[in-house]
Image 1 (tube, rainbow, N blue to C red):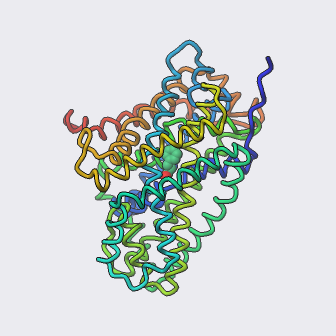
Image 2: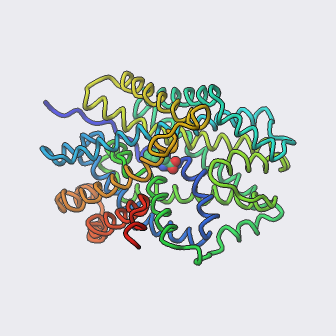
Image 3: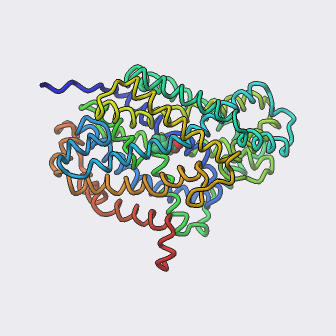
Length: 453
Ligand code: PHE
């Protein structure tokens, strides 16, 4: 039987979908905090090195695996390495997608609540203490966050059911330009605040004294999470990329866009934070407490607040659809169930994990598994273990298992493009990436300390 032609993204569609996956809460919630906290410009330099030497090669590897095999994450490994255990790496990716969604949809749901709060002008005249209370009351509430989480999951499911072309490509082609527009406007607004340039100086002043092994390793972890690597997302999307597409240049563009949004988000957030002399708090608090606080004092704060939370919701949505597609592509191709059924069944499972995550911040605060609540557990297992391990195996697979000639044909689209960097690429996938990621992994598990480094 002739193999059915696989659905293909258009050139712009491929970039929109993959950038949509990469740009997410990681860029807007976590990166600015890391940058401000870990040495500003010095951290940025380390981060860029991690992205260029590890992230980019792994993304090119994932795209190649997917496009070569024309299948889902697990199916790709099985097609390229039949009768081996490599498919387990893909299966691990599918499980990672499931677990990441289990906490990601909770925070995504919060963005909807905050859009509504912004729209109803709730931040105006609220004190820091009040905003703090609002966030704590909301995030620990039993029902409200769950309701938003369910809505967000349903939205994701709906887009996935619409299909790769009509759902993923169409929606990301619409949402990504909007996202860029909003973040650029917010960035400009922030810099033009009275003391905006001081904030910028603080942000980008390179403090190399803060760079230690811990910071380097956290930059690497952030690079992987932010670029959606190590769990089959880019393998799945790669399988939809057109055979004529120049994979390395698509990966390069996605990487640049992802970095750009992270830096723009920092520019949008920090100068504003410092203009008002506010102490930058960590992670979610920065975005859900500090920012509303700033908006409440800004001229025209209402509209900035609405724009910011719409931005956050868009960034989340284009990431959750990429995560759900990993699972749905796997279920439809491996278990031969319909797309709609696969999407609904997996969304129900995700909703269940989402409920556990959300409850673990409120009524189940005291319940812990391996020392973590569910939210932190799903987050830690994926970013500290599954994604780095996935990254190592994906690099090794491309570096050692696949024939060099086959890689060259894939990257060059059968000779159409010149690939002068092939040897460097192979050097990285064979040695540098696996070893470097292994180091991250050991460090995150606390083993390097234990070994006395
Ligand atoms: N890259 C996304 C972010 O930065 C998260 C993500 C991870 C999405 C893995 C898909 C796969 O928020």
